[in-house]
Length: 248
Image (cartoon, rainbow, N blue to C red):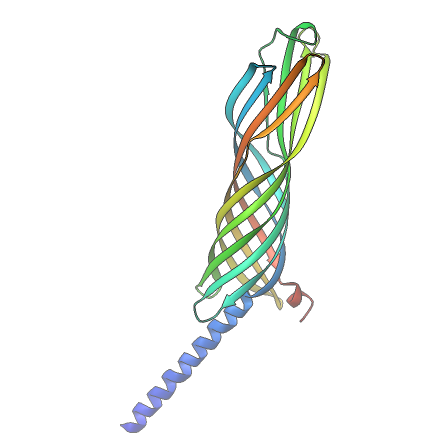
């Protein structure tokens, strides 16, 4: 009887040791530096105003959509006992979300009594950083939340045209940077491909920016544009551990 109990305890201890070693192996696979590519879609919600002097030519709140894609890199620290992960990440993306609006025809601009003012708002590129806090589960997966800060370059393009022949009276392209706050959530799966540690992720983030203002002076007239943008972004990413890629 003692022998049976002893054998059973030994078996349980050996199994527990294998389980811990197995879990440690997966946690170590999640730890370390990484770099990758991502791509996805962004849906914007933009409140915009177009004014001539103190007169509002157009004011609207409208959705906009566009693609986004870029590079990211970071480092993740894994805590084996708790299964928690903490990481820092930097990223850079090219974007093409944009929205166009125009005034009513027949307004007066630079002495032209039959004219139309048009405005286009474009998100060109974004870079920034984020902190990630995650929890490992099912060996290869982690769910995480992220808190990030973004800096985007925006363009507010203004063009005035004659109603008769659509010829350009004046135009202005005002580029400026905006700072945004971007929390989000994600799910990531880690795997090994031919000895290289890799991961795939799906992520959602919401970014909101301060109001952006642009002004164009021409003679006695002042054309002003303003926008308050926010974006919902869904992206997929693929990353690799550079150390394992080089065989370390």
